[in-house]
Length: 346
Image 1 (cartoon, rainbow, N blue to C red):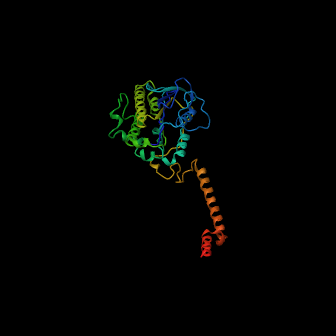
Image 2: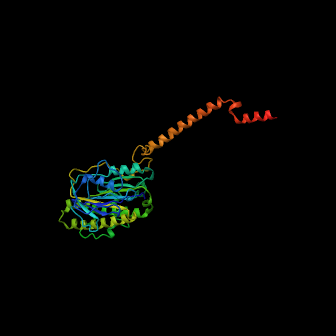
Image 3: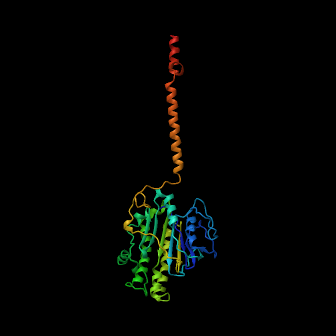
């Protein structure tokens, strides 16, 4: 796959926890708070991209210039204060939990690596929201997205229902099915990537952004002290731990995995969405009008090279043609000069 940077950051309620990260992406242990609106900048920096404003946050140290993760995976879990994720790299307090997206990071990936078609996947199953770019259109074409598709997937072979300890969770209740559907999506993403392992070996970084709100619905339906909510919290913690480990391994230990858990966002989180059935492979997946790709940063250099080379060649042709036209064969041509000398000798 594209050189992906699998970033595993998990925000536990008011904390951001780094679930998986390679050694050359250095997160420092400490209680340095980070604002929710700065998480996209942190993700961009871990992938080696520049940001508009410097991130004055001591939790992330500068890494090697030519060694960056191959994928970044950000999981946002809504409706929970914390998850039991013991095998994490570091965790940080999360302040100002405002809604955020990785749209700016996705745009940077698409602009810089348009020719390599990296995988860009942004998904929120509960809202049936999906956005895909590049190779994601082919890899995740069969990924169930709508709630109806996911619930149908739960009744098929390979469903997570056969392996999860449901305990107090029901297979028929709406809130329970929403939570189980999100767990199924995580399982299917891992399965599809295992089937397309070659995608983790190319030179462009991949980006995943997932938003899960099943726990929020369970808390609203049963209450946070209910056995259903407690069982679901334990299940999700184990699933996310394994999800991060699997993706980290698929990218050859060159990924950062992030999960953000927030009880409630301070403002409603809305964003434009589209169905997977509308995600057709067109010349420019970022435009619904089949427009050409935007030029990259090397366009100006290439344009100037071609332009001035053509001007120089045109001037050279004009000068050579002018001199040939006004040339005196008797004096300017070595062929005639040698011929005249031979005639004199004879």
